[in-house]
Length: 272
Length: 307
Image (cartoon, rainbow over all chains, first blue to last red; front, side, top):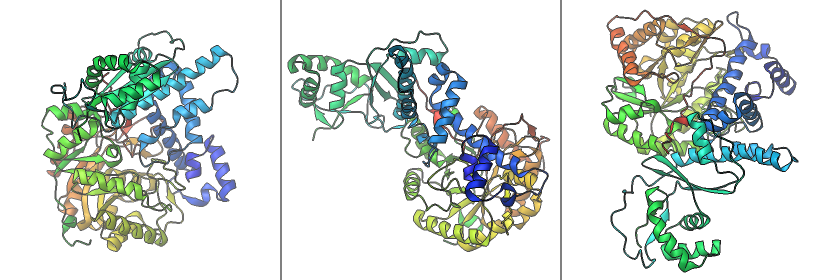
């Protein structure tokens, strides 16, 4: 039955494949106590499987769906379900590998402009999947007050401990996607963004998504704060990653930390 | 685990609805107006976003029951211990009145179709499921409550009727039953069995909860879509079930095309009228071919994105 429900192709093809694999025909297995055929009964499960999971994928990638259009999106989604049928106990995991699937199914050789156009849906999928993950991951709501009360001791001296929110996601993208996705979500027209390297921070404040393009030094600093870290150590790591002079970077970071706190990307960690 | 009291000694919670994302804003600002809530367990596992925040609020003001869809008690795959661990962790947070799932399998060979697939009902499958129910009840340290889902096919190999199988399963394991009278109506229509005989044949003392819902007539069968008002035929079965059990908790399932919360509560309130003999005159609604069974009521897309 699972082979018929999850297999590739039309119902007839799936029945034939299952018959070949298991040497069982539907009429050998399925009882018919009314005038509804075995085929129609199996079709309810087979079509329901696809419809239900397609609805999940459409819900997780609404902007990609809007840009590709239903027929193209559905073609990729159905192929994904055949190649990577769900195995998790939760439907939340269903879309986790869809971005990688899109990347893996790109044609091997296209022109430079063609490659850029193929990269766009992959990065859109990565961004939308990351957004879903941010909204469900543990955040700072239980322990975080906004704005943080006062200035922690040792902030100016670089001794204050900071930590990135556990739900923070840092993405490097090949396109500036924030405005493009916002327009698609609102149903507005927006030109396809040209390929430009972009860094994005996705976080959460009061259970609402926060998102912004960030500079390389900001990206490196946040990355350095995954564990509770002193400002000075995180700054030093960011300086090393970006090649910027530490002193100059420390001043920039000190001015920018309130923004990161406000976005819910960062918090002050308790001193040890 | 066996309890000789009615409903396994579990409480009579009254009238309840499913906790659905669409209603989160309303529930965070208004009185729930119902007696209890049922959650789809999987939707809240590993979910530390707004849904967990709302759940915490609801758990503080109303009893909550955990209803799962991925236990796959009838599968030949080993029980998923990671899933059971997550279920137990969630139960630690929710403190549910009971935990339920379905008599079905969802997949084999580590695939989860996220559907509630029918089982052949044989002595062999009864022993298989009984053994697994014992194992789950021991792990969770509480009785498991099982619902028989709507089905669209039966197996030639089956030697038990569904009600006989459920009765034997209860006898063998002491588990409880979640009697979904909509499922009985759907399956009875699709397979041609007598729904009232089904209800009368169950061990009524082991029935812990009733589900009511609205199916869809797809022409050649009924489909369990959970997206329409409860039809009269289901309300009649509901009334009979409450008479046979002496009164158990009621849950209105509505998982697609979900109405606004006040309208949902209004639909649930019809149950009180039914118990007094006032059965609404509602036909089973039809739909174009292609209506999908929606047994799992997923809500992956429900988190708000307020950026």
